[in-house]
Amino acid sequence: MTVVVAIDAGTTGVRSIAFSETGKPVASAYREFPQYFPQPGWVEHDAGEIWDAVVATLSELMSSIDDTVAAIGITDQRETVVVWDKSTGEPLHKAIVWQDRRTSERCAELVEAGHLDMVRNTTGLVLDPYFSGSKLEWLIRNNHITVTDSTAFGTVDSWLVWKLTGGTTHITDTTNASRTLLFDIGAMEWSDDMLELFGVPRSILPDVLPSSGRFGTTAMNLPIPGGIPISGIAGDQQAALFGQACFSPGDAKNTYGTGSFILMNVGQNKPDPVDGLLTTVGWTLADGSTTYAMEGAVFVTGAAIQWLRDGLNIIDDASEIGPLASSVDSTDDVFFVPALTGLGSPWWDANARGTIVGLTRGTTRAHLARATVESMALQSRDVIDAMASAGGVNVESLRVDGGASVMELLLQIQSDQIGVPVHRSAVAETTALGAAYLAGIAEGVWSGTQEVSDAWQSDLSVEPAANSREAADTLHTRWLQAVEHSKNWAV
Image (cartoon, rainbow, N blue to C red; front, side, top):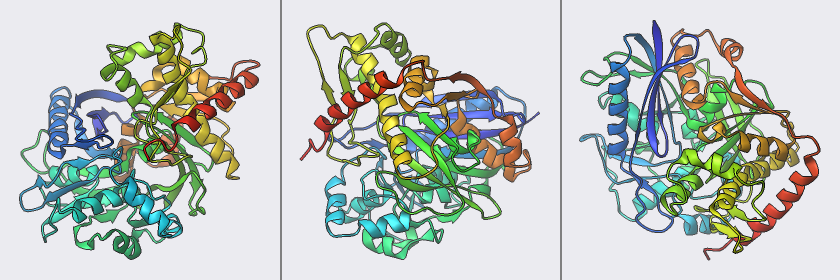
């Protein structure tokens, strides 16, 4: 049997999955890697530890299958910044993670200086620490790295391709490039204006290639055989959009991961900027055709469950959250705004901080668990409402995936809040599946997007509960009041 291997390098761990020609996972392996928090609001990874996790998962995966690997696809956590020395292959600094807020003041300075319109029109993004550009500028400005002829910058995909090819290939794809604040998503090339704004030399940047197409081949002496084509790359949320077969304008998906990311396909023409939302490259195929997406980024959803587990010890395992939240009928008017790293779409408030309101002597850990689950759906509604008010195509249904999508309670609350059906993919790992499809299409394993669309299946569909509209709107109104309390706290 022929398989396509997807490497999903997420925010808290790496998963490698082998997919069959039917698009079904046949084997997988997972490793977590450490998170580093050197100061409040700072989040870092060790790029070497990410690579170690890739090696470990590939080794375990290959030991469990006897199949021929036709191609490798890579999907990654997008905006995280890795800088390394090409001559040694070693990172020059801890990777600065997309959640990191250390450049909040700098982004505010750039907004105050009047650069926001240029940034939005060029990159489709906003001036927020979430994106790579200000992180890279911080490393250079503060002399944490010294730029030389052997300095290389990339998002995590670039780092992994460099390592997988034995240090011969420095590339990225259009989706990851579009998240750096350095890329012109209309011209589809690095922007001289943005490079000048952030003081980034072009020499350290990777070449930008389509998301589907051959990037290089694996080196020898790896857990996976040498000479295998690496033929698909996409940022995690764009990969999930592809894996969810959202190929028509108006198709939308929500991934409940560390954060939640709602993306809507808006076609092959770059739309004008929309307040509160991002415009991003959805994917670029080998023929050069690019599909754009409108995105709302919620920074903390699944990470809030981790915080309940690791920070407060309210639960021992993430799997406990659903049953615990379902053990009460309501939160008793308790709201948790998980702005632990600021607020993303549609607020874009880097100074917001996590807030719990409505506590009484009767509040239990079950109420906090349910408030956490409700916050996932309520934050997602904020984004979907912003998409609707922008005058775009209304979401008629929502395809969902990610770890928290196993909770039927969450999906019911989500459907009630947005008033449309919610469909959960039969393949839970749609992010990895999208990367596999992009790679497999490039190497002829699948014929194209129509075959992918025909293969998509749902394992659960949830409709809005009868007469749920008034209660849902009341809950959302109270939520918005709680959000106001969290805003602009870290001044």
